[in-house]
Length: 373
Image (cartoon, rainbow, N blue to C red; front, side, top):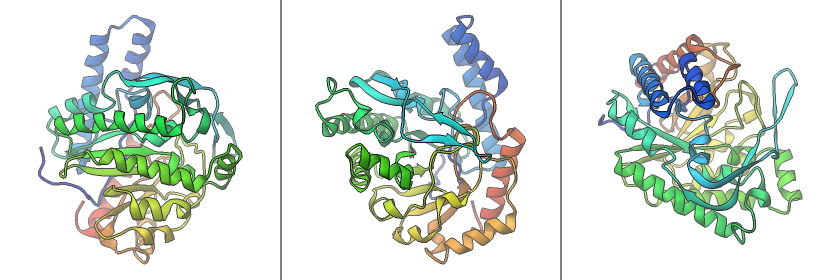
């Protein structure tokens, strides 16, 4: 295992565009013409290739591309017994052209939850076994994602008597996962959270109030849940929280700056790094970064994975300098605002060459601004 540890000055969120042969293998597996072992062999080969790509361009943190998942959150959803999907939610996906893709299905606990298999630990074991030069990073959906979009409808009352009981069970399950990851050698864990940043959206906050909940109280409850989970991580495990407002093939769900959550999350959450969406004005300004204390790092997601258009190097540096007027530059880093393929399938916003150019820009700017990646 590499001896270096975060914070790194050049970061990325984790997911990558699935190769065509991987998508074809998944379709064949669903159709029953490819067995489990054959699918796993294709997945293994594709993961090895994406790891080699990350090492080749010099990324300091390495993921498996989330190639074994249907989507960024499926690692959690598919690992748990008791999870169902409701064809409803609180926020629609929107596009730059004004189109509306509707609401993504939302997970809920239709029965008491049980961890049928690891949510990320098995994926991590294979990744770690490849011995990449960069530091292997495990990613999984934050527990708040299993509540925010449905609120009181996120669990059947036959499964849990109240929200506290539901959250307590999530804490138990996630602690089990963190401990298994630690035993597998994981030293870098990232929780992917769309709930906290979407809880900054004025429309979402109004919808939360309309269903009988308080948006600020939810922020506190989610942060407390994450803090409780992270109590079992070993001292050598870095914890990161990635926050974005949704990313589905170039579309997003929410807008609004981080101010409503900044003090509790940036200032009080027991995480070491915050990977933050900042690629458009929908994310607001850098002022909320004033809550970031010494010893913690904000990764500025200034590089967009929603468009193949390559950002201008000078513009990126200028924005880093703007953020450094709010918080010391040694608490900052650079990365994309989200993964490159939060879900599988066609119609992705970027191709492999676009991905390489974006990440090379991140690395080049990091070297220029901080002198290292």
